[in-house]
Length: 112
Image (tube, rainbow, N blue to C red; front, side, top):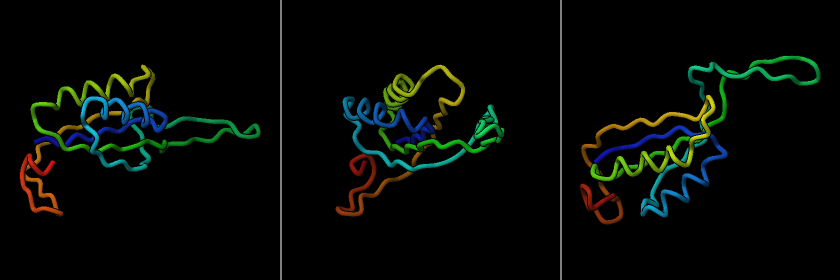
């Protein structure tokens, strides 16, 4: 099993969520986060005065899936979150040792 964490633009959430659901992956956790990458934020003007926004709003998706569909999930996220501009986000993949469904006590891949 693998945990996929995707940091994406907020305006791409619905598109990514709908695409994952079409692929049979409805379960995810979504958080509102702020962060920055290589671009180190942006500079904006308000009433003639420049100011720097160094932590930009993003959405953080966390999805745990069977190892054999990781590539499908990653490809789906990239295809639907990519704009080609700086700030599209990142995807992190890590192993998951165990999953337990609280309601039934099921363990492992059956609990996903």
